[in-house]
Image (cartoon, rainbow, N blue to C red):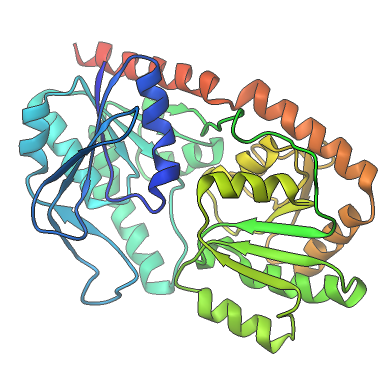
Length: 373
């Protein structure tokens, strides 16, 4: 099948490449269409052993208000889709104007479309949060109704988009996948290393992790917290670390390459994800695939995967004391870490490997094409 994947942009291209590359392995012809953030022309390049990316010029509507926010409108999107003539369009994230453009172009050109929901909202500040809700009750609702099918990663997201007007009969729930060959257990674990990976944004709950770290370090001076990634709240989190005198216990790595991330997760003692809001984080799947015990917030997107006491521990969000206690519990029990980690690996191989997930996504694609004919 010839499939066009439309996205506003990819934060981490190396990670984003996994999905289209696995589609290519199944024999599909894949084109990705993104916003060209660095130039005012159309750029085209082929990804090694994979697919072709078209980057189109556009305008960032948030440029005048907040340079860290990217919300583009792409010029010439319909024209490029018409030239490529894909059999199906997969629109990544319902929150972007590029998805509105792609769904509109699909309707006009008679091409079926699937909208993939990567978390319903992104918590930022009061104004942004209000804007998202207004959008979801208006343009977002239109997107859900006009798309052929809508793919959600979790049951929680499926219920939430239904409240914004998405017809329930259009919703299909398929989680993210993980490369279980790349992310796998390996000997050589480092003692007392707690790892977090993600963007430094409000919904990741990093401030609660720093508060929990302060409690943990008061009991165990030898614990190291490694924070991998970047984002607009980086300086705020660094200031918290300095204020709590935790600079000897917290390591900031910035963004790391995917192969390096694998090695870091493999040597970690445990993985933490204290988020306030999630879709289905790849880093959670990757950590579990490496056989790591996970401590996560008891929220949709995390508790869909982590079962408390079985393959990880769940704690209430915004509760640094509970988070700290869970970290100390795992650090103090090697047997518990081993049991949770083994169960985690088994779950991922059984239900979340790319081979399994791609087959489910292909089924949705074929269903969308059949509905359109």
